[in-house]
Image (cartoon, rainbow, N blue to C red):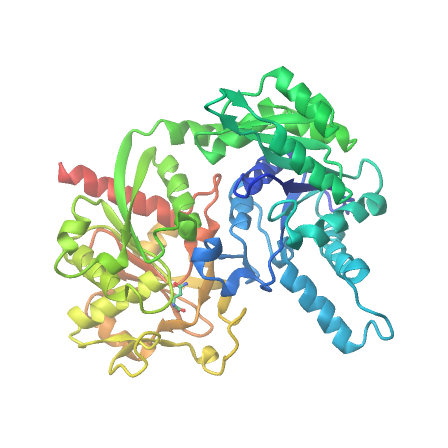
Length: 543
Ligand code: GLN
């Protein structure tokens, strides 16, 4: 790529009728198609809630908190953007109403608006526009797709829509367009697809001063051309701008479905971008081929305390999809609530599994269940993978049951424990504010020669993302190492333990970081790939 600064064009994606229509997947799929034609694309998410970032939200509220290399705690849609595009995002790719107000109010306190009444228009809208245009200022992108969270009609999203309306004038014709994602419900009793909710939702957008340029219509059934014409007529768009988005078998099919519907061509035409390249989706299609034609199958137990809401573990699920496809193996996930596990029922609950993953998390709930699970897989040679809190649980289990340190614990759950094998990081001891203060983002980690980790990564040094306050307590290090634990990854700057593994076990690995945040379709994460491999081996040895 040349070093020439690019002048980007902007695409805004809004949603109507209901939430959860998959704006993130549509935005990612369009971005993928444009990228496959050689354009440089990024995606940004604007979230209408008042939290400054989702870092302080319970996963039950909005699912997983996705962390970027630069340590931003962001919406899980950024995970989709990275997984589809294989391009890293950062803080600027996710902005909430809370952050917008926070910035404006800080400026007001500094006296930057001295003498002026600070108002939603123009001060809040200016701040929103600045956050959108700043991405363009980087000069790195041909196209910036900005997804606006929530639904049109929500009070909260009005300033965002108003900002997009203003940008139409700031940016000029052919430099931006708006895609509205909507739902065409099927009424079984009438045997009909219904367009009225879409008409109403477009009207609401129009009331906010925005005319959508393209409508992407989620539907369970194909949209006949007559229906497309009707939608076009009532919603004031060209019939070629009515795009069908039929339910797909996997989210990774959506780029191909959008290509078939010519969404990318339509966008290029309307943005006045000349590009006659065929989208190069070869690798993507090969991934889909492997995903859909597995030759093996394994069942992995995922032990966590938010299992009722699968979105809380979104990146882990997707990492298993990537790693499964890489191994041509279908990975079935058995969701296991850690609160339902005890030493008495552990054998029955984990029976038949080919591998166990103990998930990240915070706080006391379900902890003993996780520890019981680690003990069972350690003693029974079942492949084990612990992430963040999962790694910490493996340390506690080993301390209690192998080193004989009775009631060893993490000071997160038991501040007065006699054996604090997991302790608060020194850098965290003076921290009292919750938002954005964990150890966040990418840090380097050196791998130990001859270790499983080294075999997996095939490198001496790696960089992975973090989100934690507690760490392995190095005062216990010798005791662990003498008794069979290998410290195979450490941060060389502060000696922080990043990876532990167990000698004489087919696959037992705990990591303090979050590898799931870096797995993409084109680059499945090596730990997940090898964990699935180990589970396949375990499964084949069973029979
Ligand atoms: N609660 C643990 C800590 O803060 C683990 C965090 C996590 O699993 N992300 O260290």
